[in-house]
Length: 220
Image (cartoon, rainbow, N blue to C red):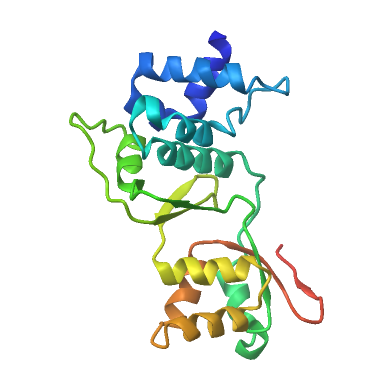
């Protein structure tokens, strides 16, 4: 039991920091009782923890606590994802614009996009940096979207604007760059497409380009 609680504490550090050792341990024991590990390795254990916390909200009264766990989980999954080298910027720049627009983008396998009901990312970032609030938290009941990825060995977290989220999610649905741009312009005719494209390129999110003729632009 101590080992399982320790694994959850390691996998959900911000959640444990906010809840405190005693509160977290009791919650962890209840989770372990309901979701015992099914693998010998405890790496990544606790995949249902956020939903479990949501189901127990009548007891702990913290309606946003599950969302905090979701951010911890996304960071962990990005951290554990396989390595992949971002496509060099100069190689992307070599592709003619008309051809680039027909491309499907392969994204870094560590990419995670998390939607939370509560605007909890600022609190999570404070906890991640070691700053534990000394007062009761009041959070906005508003949809928040956070992106996690690990382009060069270190996990990065970034809040996404609505247009960034729509653009990325369209591309992740195996749509071409041109289709993603058209989709954005339908909802926001004044969207700055150059900024949206530059954002995903400069972040190191792209690992390969796949064109309509099924030719992959090799990533050395």
